[in-house]
Length: 376
Image (cartoon, rainbow, N blue to C red; front, side):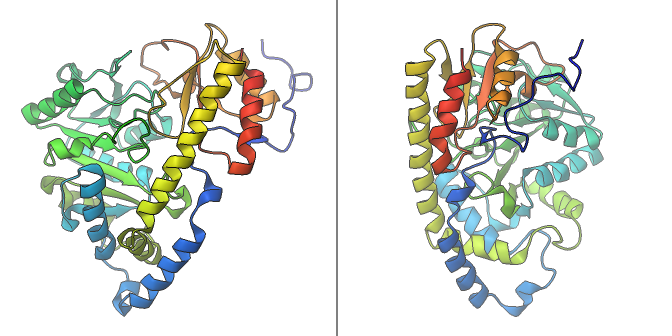
């Protein structure tokens, strides 16, 4: 029986969490305001008058051209500007893709056992049933895709969210082989693709077969989610349908931000910012691992070779009690259970999903201390 709301323990702060360790956001205080402003001034000064009109629903050609070059160099993506569509973030891009897939007659979408319910909800709102793939200690299992009866699959192959493991080479090959044999489509969410610490970045899956993979990227992690800028790199067979689904005019993505990001990329400021961010987040990851070794040696951090979050494996049966203790301490974080698909197998272990990239620099030490206090 749930405790009465009048007598139940309350979090220490009535005004919300003191420390945000929720995964998904970068350190918003590190947004490169000065460089962004310089890029905005240069972009606006150089913009033709017609750039301020309704424009191409694919997005500004300046940004699509800059992205084609950058993605080829940094992520191994094979494309050209005509096959890129600018969208207002991942959810917008997924909504467009789900609508196209449903119009093509698809009724289901294979997904990973762990992920974000908002993404599954977008697919289901479009009329696509989501079918979770098995997950083991090596990550998402793609070998059984043919048995699911689906015609498309959504994956985070570079750094699976939230488990943090990359898709193994043999499983990458298996999913591409499935797509080629069946005419299936792979939707690649390049989650954390730019933030790899212990080796060279894992190349995009799209580079293995540009005709069967849709690459989806955003500026939400590398810069800020508030920019509402993302991009779809589309196979030739899909481009016109996605543009049609987006509409006759580019109503969803601000032109000035598109032009600014194009200038930010071509000037080299984007690369410099990503490099600096990678160093900052790696330092935080190392501090988290050291703090666990000192204060909570029974807790193991996994999925930390890349990204802005870690999975902290807890002793059996402790996940919910630790989440409650964290709320009492003013810590916003989630247990692994939150990210499991309703039709997936039970969790392999109790765990927390901790976003070490989220707090601003001045709050990171306090957040880390508070986290260590609630761990068993």
